[in-house]
Length: 229
Length: 407
Image 1: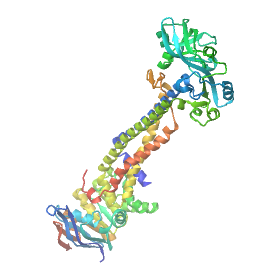
Image 2: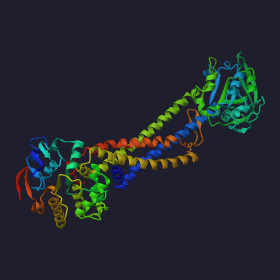
Image 3: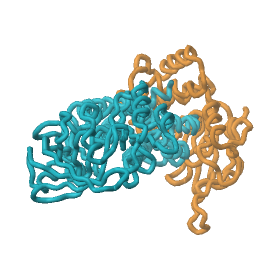
Image 4: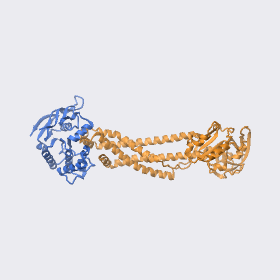
Protein backbone atom coordinates (compact mmCIF):
# COMPACT_ATOMS: atom_id res chain seq x y z
CA UNK A 1 0.00 0.00 0.00
CA UNK A 2 1.32 3.47 -0.90
CA UNK A 3 1.80 6.21 1.70
CA UNK A 4 -0.40 9.28 1.26
CA UNK A 5 1.04 11.39 4.01
CA UNK A 6 4.03 11.00 6.26
CA UNK A 7 5.79 12.95 8.95
CA UNK A 8 9.44 12.68 9.88
CA UNK A 9 10.47 13.82 13.35
CA UNK A 10 7.90 16.56 13.17
CA UNK A 11 7.85 18.90 16.17
CA UNK A 12 5.62 21.81 17.06
CA UNK A 13 6.70 23.80 20.07
CA UNK A 14 4.93 26.91 21.41
CA UNK A 15 6.92 29.61 23.21
CA UNK A 16 10.60 30.52 23.04
CA UNK A 17 11.51 30.26 26.68
CA UNK A 18 12.92 26.83 27.55
CA UNK A 19 11.11 26.74 30.88
CA UNK A 20 7.64 27.67 29.61
CA UNK A 21 7.89 26.05 26.18
CA UNK A 22 5.01 23.73 25.33
CA UNK A 23 5.92 20.74 23.20
CA UNK A 24 2.52 20.17 21.57
CA UNK A 25 3.95 17.67 19.07
CA UNK A 26 7.36 16.16 19.67
CA UNK A 27 9.35 14.11 17.15
CA UNK A 28 6.38 12.36 15.59
CA UNK A 29 7.08 10.12 12.61
CA UNK A 30 4.07 8.42 11.10
CA UNK A 31 2.90 7.32 7.67
CA UNK A 32 -0.75 7.17 6.62
CA UNK A 33 -1.38 4.86 3.69
CA UNK A 34 -4.09 5.13 1.05
CA UNK A 35 -7.52 3.93 2.14
CA UNK A 36 -6.77 4.04 5.84
CA UNK A 37 -9.44 5.05 8.37
CA UNK A 38 -6.98 6.24 10.98
CA UNK A 39 -7.59 8.05 14.23
CA UNK A 40 -5.28 10.08 16.39
CA UNK A 41 -6.40 9.53 19.94
CA UNK A 42 -5.34 10.77 23.31
CA UNK A 43 -6.43 12.87 26.25
CA UNK A 44 -7.09 16.61 26.01
CA UNK A 45 -3.85 18.52 25.48
CA UNK A 46 -2.04 15.50 24.07
CA UNK A 47 -1.48 17.30 20.72
CA UNK A 48 -4.13 15.60 18.53
CA UNK A 49 -5.46 18.78 16.92
CA UNK A 50 -1.96 20.26 16.52
CA UNK A 51 -0.77 17.11 14.74
CA UNK A 52 -3.86 17.17 12.52
CA UNK A 53 -3.17 20.84 11.66
CA UNK A 54 0.42 19.96 10.80
CA UNK A 55 -0.76 17.11 8.57
CA UNK A 56 -3.12 19.51 6.79
CA UNK A 57 -0.62 22.34 6.36
CA UNK A 58 -2.66 24.62 8.60
CA UNK A 59 0.34 25.14 10.83
CA UNK A 60 4.08 25.04 10.22
CA UNK A 61 6.20 22.63 12.26
CA UNK A 62 9.02 23.91 14.44
CA UNK A 63 11.16 21.19 12.87
CA UNK A 64 10.75 18.05 10.84
CA UNK A 65 8.88 17.48 7.62
CA UNK A 66 5.34 16.66 6.52
CA UNK A 67 5.13 15.05 3.11
CA UNK A 68 1.92 14.62 1.15
CA UNK A 69 2.37 12.48 -1.96
CA UNK A 70 6.08 13.22 -1.89
CA UNK A 71 5.76 17.02 -1.44
CA UNK A 72 7.04 18.60 1.75
CA UNK A 73 4.15 20.88 2.70
CA UNK A 74 6.03 22.15 5.76
CA UNK A 75 8.17 24.21 3.40
CA UNK A 76 5.20 25.80 1.62
CA UNK A 77 3.47 29.09 2.40
CA UNK A 78 0.99 31.65 1.07
CA UNK A 79 -0.96 31.02 -2.12
CA UNK A 80 1.06 27.90 -3.02
CA UNK A 81 0.10 26.22 0.24
CA UNK A 82 -3.53 27.36 -0.15
CA UNK A 83 -3.68 25.84 -3.63
CA UNK A 84 -2.08 22.64 -2.39
CA UNK A 85 -4.59 22.28 0.43
CA UNK A 86 -7.44 23.04 -1.96
CA UNK A 87 -6.39 20.33 -4.42
CA UNK A 88 -5.10 17.61 -2.09
CA UNK A 89 -6.70 17.82 1.35
CA UNK A 90 -10.27 17.81 2.59
CA UNK A 91 -11.17 19.16 6.02
CA UNK A 92 -14.06 18.45 8.37
CA UNK A 93 -14.24 20.56 11.49
CA UNK A 94 -15.86 20.04 14.85
CA UNK A 95 -18.33 22.94 14.45
CA UNK A 96 -19.25 22.18 10.80
CA UNK A 97 -18.18 25.69 9.79
CA UNK A 98 -20.16 26.12 6.67
CA UNK A 99 -20.37 29.57 5.12
CA UNK A 100 -23.63 30.80 6.66
CA UNK A 101 -24.69 33.02 3.76
CA UNK A 102 -24.36 30.19 1.25
CA UNK A 103 -26.85 27.36 0.73
CA UNK A 104 -25.77 23.74 1.21
CA UNK A 105 -25.20 23.46 -2.55
CA UNK A 106 -23.16 26.65 -2.68
CA UNK A 107 -21.05 25.51 0.27
CA UNK A 108 -20.22 22.30 -1.54
CA UNK A 109 -19.66 24.14 -4.81
CA UNK A 110 -17.37 26.80 -3.26
CA UNK A 111 -14.16 24.76 -3.33
CA UNK A 112 -14.75 23.78 -6.96
CA UNK A 113 -15.12 27.47 -7.82
CA UNK A 114 -11.70 28.01 -6.25
CA UNK A 115 -10.41 25.16 -8.42
CA UNK A 116 -11.95 26.62 -11.55
CA UNK A 117 -14.15 23.59 -12.27
CA UNK A 118 -16.67 24.20 -15.06
CA UNK A 119 -20.26 25.03 -14.11
CA UNK A 120 -21.85 21.89 -15.56
CA UNK A 121 -19.29 19.65 -13.82
CA UNK A 122 -19.80 21.54 -10.56
CA UNK A 123 -23.53 21.02 -10.76
CA UNK A 124 -23.14 17.32 -11.50
CA UNK A 125 -20.74 16.78 -8.62
CA UNK A 126 -22.87 18.79 -6.15
CA UNK A 127 -25.94 16.72 -7.02
CA UNK A 128 -23.92 13.53 -6.71
CA UNK A 129 -22.44 14.53 -3.34
CA UNK A 130 -25.80 15.59 -1.91
CA UNK A 131 -27.13 12.18 -2.89
CA UNK A 132 -24.16 10.35 -1.38
CA UNK A 133 -24.51 12.13 1.97
CA UNK A 134 -28.29 11.72 1.95
CA UNK A 135 -29.30 15.36 1.56
CA UNK A 136 -31.22 15.23 -1.72
CA UNK A 137 -33.76 18.05 -1.83
CA UNK A 138 -32.05 20.05 0.89
CA UNK A 139 -29.40 21.68 -1.30
CA UNK A 140 -31.02 25.10 -1.35
CA UNK A 141 -31.20 25.40 2.41
CA UNK A 142 -28.83 27.63 4.28
CA UNK A 143 -26.92 26.12 7.23
CA UNK A 144 -29.24 27.68 9.83
CA UNK A 145 -32.11 25.70 8.28
CA UNK A 146 -30.27 22.38 8.67
CA UNK A 147 -29.79 20.25 11.75
CA UNK A 148 -26.31 19.72 13.23
CA UNK A 149 -26.06 16.28 11.61
CA UNK A 150 -27.18 17.64 8.25
CA UNK A 151 -24.66 20.47 8.46
CA UNK A 152 -21.88 18.01 9.20
CA UNK A 153 -22.98 15.94 6.20
CA UNK A 154 -22.68 19.06 4.05
CA UNK A 155 -19.20 19.53 5.55
CA UNK A 156 -18.33 15.93 4.58
CA UNK A 157 -19.64 16.55 1.07
CA UNK A 158 -17.61 19.77 0.86
CA UNK A 159 -14.49 17.94 1.98
CA UNK A 160 -14.97 15.15 -0.55
CA UNK A 161 -16.25 16.96 -3.60
CA UNK A 162 -12.81 18.06 -4.80
CA UNK A 163 -11.56 14.44 -4.70
CA UNK A 164 -8.76 15.09 -2.21
CA UNK A 165 -6.12 12.51 -1.45
CA UNK A 166 -6.87 12.64 2.24
CA UNK A 167 -9.64 13.93 4.50
CA UNK A 168 -8.68 15.28 7.90
CA UNK A 169 -11.46 15.45 10.45
CA UNK A 170 -11.09 17.20 13.79
CA UNK A 171 -13.52 15.64 16.25
CA UNK A 172 -16.32 15.57 13.65
CA UNK A 173 -18.87 13.98 15.98
CA UNK A 174 -18.17 16.09 19.05
CA UNK A 175 -21.17 18.37 18.56
CA UNK A 176 -23.57 15.65 17.43
CA UNK A 177 -25.86 13.44 19.44
CA UNK A 178 -24.95 9.78 19.60
CA UNK A 179 -27.38 8.58 16.94
CA UNK A 180 -26.47 11.32 14.46
CA UNK A 181 -22.76 10.75 15.18
CA UNK A 182 -23.06 7.03 14.40
CA UNK A 183 -24.96 7.75 11.18
CA UNK A 184 -22.28 10.20 10.09
CA UNK A 185 -19.48 7.77 10.93
CA UNK A 186 -21.22 5.03 8.98
CA UNK A 187 -21.44 7.40 6.03
CA UNK A 188 -17.73 8.20 6.20
CA UNK A 189 -16.81 4.55 6.65
CA UNK A 190 -18.90 3.69 3.63
CA UNK A 191 -17.19 6.38 1.56
CA UNK A 192 -13.86 5.11 2.81
CA UNK A 193 -14.62 1.55 1.79
CA UNK A 194 -16.40 2.31 -1.48
CA UNK A 195 -14.06 5.00 -2.76
CA UNK A 196 -10.86 3.93 -1.00
CA UNK A 197 -10.78 7.44 0.46
CA UNK A 198 -8.22 8.08 3.21
CA UNK A 199 -9.52 9.51 6.49
CA UNK A 200 -7.56 10.73 9.50
CA UNK A 201 -9.51 11.75 12.60
CA UNK A 202 -8.48 13.40 15.80
CA UNK A 203 -10.90 12.22 18.46
CA UNK A 204 -11.58 10.71 21.79
CA UNK A 205 -14.94 9.39 20.64
CA UNK A 206 -15.03 5.63 21.14
CA UNK A 207 -17.47 5.21 18.26
CA UNK A 208 -14.81 6.45 15.89
CA UNK A 209 -12.08 4.41 17.55
CA UNK A 210 -14.20 1.26 17.17
CA UNK A 211 -14.55 1.82 13.44
CA UNK A 212 -10.95 2.88 12.83
CA UNK A 213 -8.50 0.66 11.04
CA UNK A 214 -5.62 2.27 12.90
CA UNK A 215 -5.22 4.02 16.25
CA UNK A 216 -2.35 6.40 16.83
CA UNK A 217 -2.12 7.16 20.53
CA UNK A 218 -0.60 10.49 21.48
CA UNK A 219 0.59 11.42 24.95
CA UNK A 220 2.23 14.77 25.71
CA UNK A 221 2.86 15.29 22.01
CA UNK A 222 4.63 11.95 21.46
CA UNK A 223 3.33 8.81 19.81
CA UNK A 224 2.71 6.40 22.64
CA UNK A 225 1.27 3.56 20.62
CA UNK A 226 0.52 3.01 16.93
CA UNK A 227 -1.75 0.03 16.42
CA UNK A 228 -3.34 -1.33 13.26
CA UNK A 229 -6.45 -3.45 13.57
CA UNK B 1 -18.70 36.67 -9.42
CA UNK B 2 -18.75 34.33 -6.43
CA UNK B 3 -16.75 36.90 -4.46
CA UNK B 4 -19.32 39.59 -5.25
CA UNK B 5 -22.17 37.26 -4.31
CA UNK B 6 -20.46 36.31 -1.05
CA UNK B 7 -19.56 39.94 -0.29
CA UNK B 8 -23.09 41.12 -0.99
CA UNK B 9 -24.64 38.47 1.23
CA UNK B 10 -22.10 39.16 3.97
CA UNK B 11 -23.35 42.74 4.13
CA UNK B 12 -26.71 41.45 5.29
CA UNK B 13 -25.31 39.20 8.00
CA UNK B 14 -25.30 42.03 10.48
CA UNK B 15 -27.84 44.36 8.95
CA UNK B 16 -27.76 46.85 11.80
CA UNK B 17 -24.00 47.31 11.55
CA UNK B 18 -24.15 47.59 7.77
CA UNK B 19 -26.92 50.19 8.01
CA UNK B 20 -24.90 52.20 10.53
CA UNK B 21 -21.81 52.07 8.32
CA UNK B 22 -23.83 53.01 5.23
CA UNK B 23 -25.38 55.90 7.19
CA UNK B 24 -21.96 57.09 8.30
CA UNK B 25 -20.55 57.10 4.78
CA UNK B 26 -23.68 58.38 3.06
CA UNK B 27 -24.23 61.20 5.56
CA UNK B 28 -20.59 62.21 5.17
CA UNK B 29 -21.12 62.42 1.42
CA UNK B 30 -24.38 64.31 1.93
CA UNK B 31 -22.63 66.75 4.25
CA UNK B 32 -19.81 67.20 1.75
CA UNK B 33 -22.24 67.84 -1.11
CA UNK B 34 -24.28 70.27 1.02
CA UNK B 35 -21.21 72.13 2.33
CA UNK B 36 -19.83 72.43 -1.19
CA UNK B 37 -23.17 73.72 -2.48
CA UNK B 38 -23.41 76.32 0.29
CA UNK B 39 -19.76 77.32 -0.17
CA UNK B 40 -20.37 77.79 -3.89
CA UNK B 41 -23.53 79.77 -3.12
CA UNK B 42 -21.67 81.90 -0.61
CA UNK B 43 -18.92 82.53 -3.13
CA UNK B 44 -21.42 83.52 -5.79
CA UNK B 45 -23.12 85.86 -3.35
CA UNK B 46 -19.79 87.29 -2.27
CA UNK B 47 -18.66 87.86 -5.84
CA UNK B 48 -22.06 89.24 -6.76
CA UNK B 49 -21.90 91.66 -3.84
CA UNK B 50 -18.41 92.71 -4.81
CA UNK B 51 -19.13 93.14 -8.49
CA UNK B 52 -22.71 94.30 -8.62
CA UNK B 53 -22.85 96.77 -5.71
CA UNK B 54 -20.42 99.36 -6.97
CA UNK B 55 -17.19 97.85 -8.35
CA UNK B 56 -18.43 96.11 -11.49
CA UNK B 57 -16.68 93.08 -12.93
CA UNK B 58 -13.76 95.11 -14.24
CA UNK B 59 -12.49 98.68 -14.16
CA UNK B 60 -10.31 100.89 -16.31
CA UNK B 61 -8.11 103.62 -14.77
CA UNK B 62 -5.08 105.65 -15.47
CA UNK B 63 -2.03 103.77 -14.15
CA UNK B 64 -1.33 104.88 -10.57
CA UNK B 65 -4.82 106.30 -9.95
CA UNK B 66 -5.95 103.49 -7.67
CA UNK B 67 -3.08 104.02 -5.20
CA UNK B 68 -4.40 107.32 -3.75
CA UNK B 69 -7.28 108.38 -6.03
CA UNK B 70 -5.32 111.38 -7.33
CA UNK B 71 -7.84 113.55 -9.27
CA UNK B 72 -5.11 114.58 -11.70
CA UNK B 73 -4.67 111.00 -12.91
CA UNK B 74 -7.68 110.88 -15.19
CA UNK B 75 -8.14 109.15 -18.53
CA UNK B 76 -7.60 111.75 -21.25
CA UNK B 77 -8.84 109.72 -24.15
CA UNK B 78 -12.13 108.53 -22.69
CA UNK B 79 -13.89 108.93 -26.06
CA UNK B 80 -11.51 106.41 -27.65
CA UNK B 81 -11.93 104.06 -24.71
CA UNK B 82 -15.72 104.33 -24.90
CA UNK B 83 -15.54 103.54 -28.61
CA UNK B 84 -13.47 100.42 -27.90
CA UNK B 85 -15.84 99.37 -25.16
CA UNK B 86 -18.94 99.88 -27.28
CA UNK B 87 -17.48 97.63 -30.00
CA UNK B 88 -16.55 94.79 -27.67
CA UNK B 89 -19.21 92.09 -27.91
CA UNK B 90 -18.03 90.39 -24.71
CA UNK B 91 -19.16 93.39 -22.65
CA UNK B 92 -22.67 93.67 -21.34
CA UNK B 93 -22.41 97.29 -20.19
CA UNK B 94 -19.99 99.97 -19.09
CA UNK B 95 -20.22 103.28 -17.32
CA UNK B 96 -17.83 106.22 -16.83
CA UNK B 97 -17.18 107.80 -13.43
CA UNK B 98 -15.47 110.83 -12.04
CA UNK B 99 -14.25 110.35 -8.49
CA UNK B 100 -12.76 112.66 -5.92
CA UNK B 101 -12.24 112.84 -2.20
CA UNK B 102 -13.67 115.93 -0.58
CA UNK B 103 -15.34 117.60 2.35
CA UNK B 104 -19.08 117.20 2.63
CA UNK B 105 -20.73 119.90 4.70
CA UNK B 106 -24.22 120.63 5.89
CA UNK B 107 -25.46 123.51 7.99
CA UNK B 108 -24.80 121.44 11.09
CA UNK B 109 -21.81 119.21 10.49
CA UNK B 110 -18.98 118.28 8.18
CA UNK B 111 -17.52 114.98 7.07
CA UNK B 112 -14.79 113.70 4.80
CA UNK B 113 -16.15 111.58 1.99
CA UNK B 114 -15.82 110.27 -1.50
CA UNK B 115 -17.67 111.91 -4.37
CA UNK B 116 -18.80 109.76 -7.27
CA UNK B 117 -19.90 111.48 -10.43
CA UNK B 118 -21.92 108.94 -12.36
CA UNK B 119 -23.78 108.62 -15.64
CA UNK B 120 -27.25 108.00 -14.21
CA UNK B 121 -28.55 105.97 -17.16
CA UNK B 122 -25.50 103.76 -17.64
CA UNK B 123 -24.87 103.34 -13.92
CA UNK B 124 -28.35 101.93 -13.56
CA UNK B 125 -27.25 98.82 -15.52
CA UNK B 126 -23.99 98.31 -13.73
CA UNK B 127 -24.29 99.06 -9.99
CA UNK B 128 -26.87 99.03 -7.22
CA UNK B 129 -26.94 102.78 -6.65
CA UNK B 130 -30.47 103.07 -8.02
CA UNK B 131 -31.67 100.08 -5.97
CA UNK B 132 -30.07 101.52 -2.83
CA UNK B 133 -32.33 104.59 -2.88
CA UNK B 134 -34.58 104.12 0.16
CA UNK B 135 -36.11 107.60 0.15
CA UNK B 136 -36.37 110.28 -2.50
CA UNK B 137 -35.42 109.82 -6.15
CA UNK B 138 -32.51 108.44 -8.14
CA UNK B 139 -30.53 110.90 -10.28
CA UNK B 140 -32.42 112.33 -13.22
CA UNK B 141 -29.61 114.40 -14.74
CA UNK B 142 -30.15 117.74 -13.04
CA UNK B 143 -26.96 119.47 -11.90
CA UNK B 144 -27.89 120.00 -8.25
CA UNK B 145 -28.98 116.44 -7.45
CA UNK B 146 -27.06 114.50 -4.80
CA UNK B 147 -27.52 111.04 -3.29
CA UNK B 148 -26.17 110.46 0.19
CA UNK B 149 -25.82 107.44 2.44
CA UNK B 150 -28.29 107.16 5.30
CA UNK B 151 -25.64 107.07 8.01
CA UNK B 152 -23.81 110.06 6.55
CA UNK B 153 -27.11 111.94 6.35
CA UNK B 154 -27.65 111.21 10.03
CA UNK B 155 -24.14 112.42 10.83
CA UNK B 156 -24.67 115.64 8.88
CA UNK B 157 -28.20 115.95 10.31
CA UNK B 158 -29.72 116.44 6.86
CA UNK B 159 -32.70 115.02 5.01
CA UNK B 160 -34.25 115.12 1.55
CA UNK B 161 -34.12 118.59 0.00
CA UNK B 162 -31.48 119.90 2.41
CA UNK B 163 -28.40 121.65 1.06
CA UNK B 164 -24.98 120.09 0.94
CA UNK B 165 -21.75 121.85 0.05
CA UNK B 166 -18.93 119.85 -1.47
CA UNK B 167 -15.43 121.20 -1.10
CA UNK B 168 -13.10 119.67 -3.65
CA UNK B 169 -9.68 120.10 -5.10
CA UNK B 170 -9.84 120.90 -8.81
CA UNK B 171 -8.05 118.66 -11.25
CA UNK B 172 -4.82 120.01 -12.79
CA UNK B 173 -4.67 123.19 -10.70
CA UNK B 174 -5.36 121.81 -7.24
CA UNK B 175 -7.44 124.92 -6.50
CA UNK B 176 -10.14 124.48 -3.89
CA UNK B 177 -13.63 124.61 -5.30
CA UNK B 178 -17.03 124.49 -3.70
CA UNK B 179 -20.32 123.38 -5.17
CA UNK B 180 -23.83 123.43 -3.76
CA UNK B 181 -26.20 120.49 -4.07
CA UNK B 182 -29.58 119.45 -2.71
CA UNK B 183 -30.25 115.99 -1.40
CA UNK B 184 -32.50 114.20 -3.85
CA UNK B 185 -32.19 110.70 -2.46
CA UNK B 186 -31.11 108.76 0.64
CA UNK B 187 -29.16 105.53 0.08
CA UNK B 188 -28.86 102.34 2.06
CA UNK B 189 -26.45 99.81 0.54
CA UNK B 190 -26.21 97.76 3.71
CA UNK B 191 -22.44 98.30 3.54
CA UNK B 192 -20.96 100.54 6.17
CA UNK B 193 -18.14 101.72 3.93
CA UNK B 194 -20.56 103.01 1.28
CA UNK B 195 -23.27 104.36 3.58
CA UNK B 196 -20.77 106.28 5.74
CA UNK B 197 -18.55 107.78 3.07
CA UNK B 198 -20.06 107.97 -0.43
CA UNK B 199 -22.10 110.65 -2.14
CA UNK B 200 -23.26 110.41 -5.76
CA UNK B 201 -23.92 113.26 -8.19
CA UNK B 202 -24.35 113.46 -11.97
CA UNK B 203 -21.09 113.07 -13.89
CA UNK B 204 -21.51 116.38 -15.71
CA UNK B 205 -21.84 118.23 -12.39
CA UNK B 206 -18.82 116.40 -11.03
CA UNK B 207 -16.70 117.31 -14.04
CA UNK B 208 -17.80 120.89 -13.66
CA UNK B 209 -16.95 120.98 -9.97
CA UNK B 210 -13.53 119.44 -10.61
CA UNK B 211 -12.87 121.59 -13.66
CA UNK B 212 -12.57 118.57 -15.91
CA UNK B 213 -13.57 118.43 -19.57
CA UNK B 214 -16.24 116.11 -21.01
CA UNK B 215 -13.48 113.83 -22.31
CA UNK B 216 -11.85 113.36 -18.94
CA UNK B 217 -12.86 110.40 -16.77
CA UNK B 218 -11.33 108.70 -13.74
CA UNK B 219 -12.88 105.30 -14.11
CA UNK B 220 -14.80 103.04 -16.43
CA UNK B 221 -16.73 100.23 -14.80
CA UNK B 222 -17.52 97.16 -16.92
CA UNK B 223 -19.74 94.11 -16.78
CA UNK B 224 -19.38 91.12 -19.09
CA UNK B 225 -21.88 88.96 -20.91
CA UNK B 226 -20.00 85.97 -19.46
CA UNK B 227 -18.80 87.04 -15.99
CA UNK B 228 -15.96 84.49 -16.14
CA UNK B 229 -14.29 86.66 -18.80
CA UNK B 230 -13.60 89.18 -16.04
CA UNK B 231 -11.42 86.62 -14.26
CA UNK B 232 -9.25 86.07 -17.32
CA UNK B 233 -6.54 88.75 -17.64
CA UNK B 234 -5.81 87.50 -21.18
CA UNK B 235 -9.34 88.14 -22.45
CA UNK B 236 -9.81 90.67 -25.29
CA UNK B 237 -10.62 93.94 -23.58
CA UNK B 238 -7.77 93.67 -21.07
CA UNK B 239 -5.26 92.90 -23.80
CA UNK B 240 -6.60 95.68 -25.98
CA UNK B 241 -6.57 98.46 -23.39
CA UNK B 242 -3.71 97.71 -21.02
CA UNK B 243 -0.63 99.77 -21.79
CA UNK B 244 1.83 102.04 -19.99
CA UNK B 245 -0.85 104.66 -19.24
CA UNK B 246 -4.01 102.65 -18.84
CA UNK B 247 -4.74 99.68 -16.65
CA UNK B 248 -7.81 97.52 -17.18
CA UNK B 249 -8.27 95.01 -14.37
CA UNK B 250 -10.81 92.32 -13.51
CA UNK B 251 -12.51 92.20 -10.12
CA UNK B 252 -10.09 89.55 -8.83
CA UNK B 253 -7.14 91.86 -9.45
CA UNK B 254 -9.02 94.86 -8.09
CA UNK B 255 -9.99 93.03 -4.90
CA UNK B 256 -7.04 90.82 -4.06
CA UNK B 257 -8.41 90.11 -0.59
CA UNK B 258 -11.44 88.49 -2.26
CA UNK B 259 -9.10 86.18 -4.16
CA UNK B 260 -7.57 85.19 -0.83
CA UNK B 261 -11.04 84.65 0.64
CA UNK B 262 -11.93 82.40 -2.32
CA UNK B 263 -8.74 80.41 -1.78
CA UNK B 264 -9.50 80.23 1.92
CA UNK B 265 -12.99 78.94 1.19
CA UNK B 266 -11.59 76.30 -1.14
CA UNK B 267 -9.20 75.19 1.64
CA UNK B 268 -12.09 75.23 4.12
CA UNK B 269 -14.06 72.88 1.86
CA UNK B 270 -11.01 70.67 1.58
CA UNK B 271 -10.52 70.61 5.35
CA UNK B 272 -14.22 69.92 6.00
CA UNK B 273 -14.09 67.12 3.43
CA UNK B 274 -10.90 65.69 4.89
CA UNK B 275 -12.28 65.72 8.46
CA UNK B 276 -15.58 64.18 7.37
CA UNK B 277 -13.85 61.41 5.50
CA UNK B 278 -11.25 60.80 8.16
CA UNK B 279 -14.11 60.16 10.57
CA UNK B 280 -15.98 58.07 8.02
CA UNK B 281 -12.81 56.09 7.23
CA UNK B 282 -12.28 55.35 10.92
CA UNK B 283 -15.88 54.16 11.04
CA UNK B 284 -15.33 51.93 8.03
CA UNK B 285 -12.12 50.48 9.50
CA UNK B 286 -13.89 49.83 12.79
CA UNK B 287 -16.88 48.25 11.10
CA UNK B 288 -14.69 46.08 8.89
CA UNK B 289 -12.62 44.89 11.82
CA UNK B 290 -15.72 44.06 13.82
CA UNK B 291 -17.02 42.11 10.88
CA UNK B 292 -13.70 40.28 10.48
CA UNK B 293 -13.39 39.44 14.18
CA UNK B 294 -16.92 38.09 14.14
CA UNK B 295 -16.02 35.81 11.24
CA UNK B 296 -12.47 34.96 12.19
CA UNK B 297 -13.26 31.24 12.63
CA UNK B 298 -14.99 31.27 9.26
CA UNK B 299 -11.97 32.91 7.63
CA UNK B 300 -9.84 30.18 9.22
CA UNK B 301 -12.10 27.56 7.64
CA UNK B 302 -12.26 29.05 4.15
CA UNK B 303 -8.52 29.56 4.23
CA UNK B 304 -8.04 25.96 5.40
CA UNK B 305 -10.07 24.58 2.52
CA UNK B 306 -7.94 26.44 0.00
CA UNK B 307 -8.96 30.08 -0.34
CA UNK B 308 -5.90 32.13 -1.18
CA UNK B 309 -4.95 35.12 1.01
CA UNK B 310 -5.47 37.43 -1.97
CA UNK B 311 -8.98 36.09 -2.46
CA UNK B 312 -9.81 36.87 1.17
CA UNK B 313 -8.45 40.40 0.70
CA UNK B 314 -10.53 40.72 -2.44
CA UNK B 315 -13.62 39.62 -0.53
CA UNK B 316 -13.13 42.30 2.16
CA UNK B 317 -12.39 45.00 -0.43
CA UNK B 318 -15.42 43.89 -2.40
CA UNK B 319 -17.56 44.24 0.73
CA UNK B 320 -16.13 47.76 1.21
CA UNK B 321 -16.80 48.59 -2.43
CA UNK B 322 -20.42 47.46 -2.14
CA UNK B 323 -20.84 49.41 1.11
CA UNK B 324 -19.39 52.50 -0.58
CA UNK B 325 -21.55 52.09 -3.68
CA UNK B 326 -24.77 51.72 -1.69
CA UNK B 327 -23.71 54.63 0.55
CA UNK B 328 -22.94 56.82 -2.46
CA UNK B 329 -26.37 56.14 -3.93
CA UNK B 330 -28.06 57.14 -0.70
CA UNK B 331 -25.64 60.03 -0.08
CA UNK B 332 -26.24 61.45 -3.56
CA UNK B 333 -30.02 61.23 -3.14
CA UNK B 334 -29.83 62.95 0.25
CA UNK B 335 -27.33 65.47 -1.13
CA UNK B 336 -29.67 66.20 -4.02
CA UNK B 337 -32.56 66.68 -1.61
CA UNK B 338 -30.57 69.00 0.68
CA UNK B 339 -29.20 71.00 -2.27
CA UNK B 340 -32.67 71.28 -3.78
CA UNK B 341 -33.93 72.72 -0.52
CA UNK B 342 -31.07 75.16 0.01
CA UNK B 343 -31.11 76.23 -3.65
CA UNK B 344 -34.77 77.21 -3.34
CA UNK B 345 -35.07 78.41 0.25
CA UNK B 346 -31.51 79.50 0.95
CA UNK B 347 -29.85 79.73 4.32
CA UNK B 348 -30.40 83.00 6.16
CA UNK B 349 -27.33 84.36 7.90
CA UNK B 350 -28.83 87.72 8.87
CA UNK B 351 -26.76 90.73 7.94
CA UNK B 352 -23.12 89.84 7.73
CA UNK B 353 -20.18 91.93 6.63
CA UNK B 354 -17.34 89.88 5.27
CA UNK B 355 -14.11 91.76 4.70
CA UNK B 356 -16.08 94.98 4.19
CA UNK B 357 -18.56 93.26 1.89
CA UNK B 358 -22.15 93.00 3.07
CA UNK B 359 -23.87 89.66 2.74
CA UNK B 360 -27.42 90.34 3.67
CA UNK B 361 -29.24 87.97 1.36
CA UNK B 362 -29.85 84.28 1.94
CA UNK B 363 -27.11 81.97 0.73
CA UNK B 364 -28.53 79.66 -1.89
CA UNK B 365 -26.97 76.23 -2.38
CA UNK B 366 -25.56 75.66 -5.85
CA UNK B 367 -25.50 72.36 -7.70
CA UNK B 368 -22.28 71.41 -9.41
CA UNK B 369 -21.53 68.33 -11.49
CA UNK B 370 -18.48 67.52 -9.32
CA UNK B 371 -20.76 66.99 -6.32
CA UNK B 372 -22.33 63.99 -8.03
CA UNK B 373 -19.33 62.68 -9.97
CA UNK B 374 -16.03 63.50 -8.27
CA UNK B 375 -17.22 63.36 -4.67
CA UNK B 376 -18.80 59.88 -4.91
CA UNK B 377 -15.66 58.61 -6.65
CA UNK B 378 -13.56 60.01 -3.79
CA UNK B 379 -15.91 58.29 -1.33
CA UNK B 380 -15.55 54.93 -3.06
CA UNK B 381 -11.76 55.28 -3.27
CA UNK B 382 -11.45 56.38 0.37
CA UNK B 383 -13.75 53.61 1.61
CA UNK B 384 -11.75 50.99 -0.27
CA UNK B 385 -8.53 52.58 1.00
CA UNK B 386 -9.91 52.40 4.56
CA UNK B 387 -10.64 48.71 4.02
CA UNK B 388 -7.12 47.85 2.86
CA UNK B 389 -5.75 47.46 6.36
CA UNK B 390 -8.60 45.19 7.57
CA UNK B 391 -8.31 43.24 4.29
CA UNK B 392 -4.60 42.65 4.81
CA UNK B 393 -5.32 41.58 8.36
CA UNK B 394 -7.93 39.07 7.19
CA UNK B 395 -5.59 37.74 4.49
CA UNK B 396 -2.89 37.10 7.07
CA UNK B 397 -5.11 35.10 9.41
CA UNK B 398 -3.37 31.84 10.26
CA UNK B 399 -5.93 29.03 9.90
CA UNK B 400 -4.67 26.98 12.85
CA UNK B 401 -4.92 30.05 15.14
CA UNK B 402 -8.30 31.16 13.79
CA UNK B 403 -9.69 27.66 14.26
CA UNK B 404 -8.71 27.72 17.95
CA UNK B 405 -10.90 30.77 18.52
CA UNK B 406 -14.49 30.46 19.53
CA UNK B 407 -16.58 33.58 19.13
